[in-house]
Length: 71
Image (cartoon, rainbow, N blue to C red; front, top):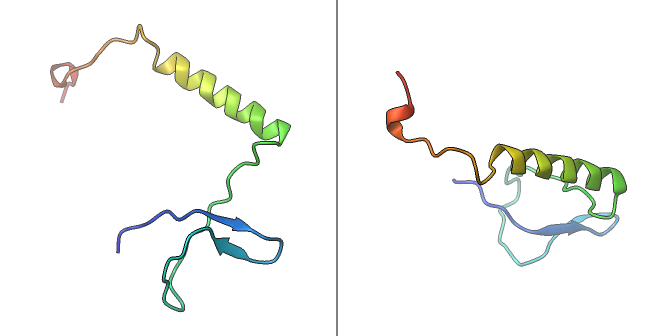
């Protein structure tokens, strides 16, 4: 089975899916905890990452084609 991303939240005791989705008992799951957007440290990391990506993919970045790739 291909992976699937479902939105969910933690209610203090359980992880609850935000929309109905049928899962079989014992289905393997992977849980990713997203950064709290109200956490100042998380916001600092997000800003730093965003700035790095903006510099790496700026408008003056050259366009590379398959001819630029050397074997």
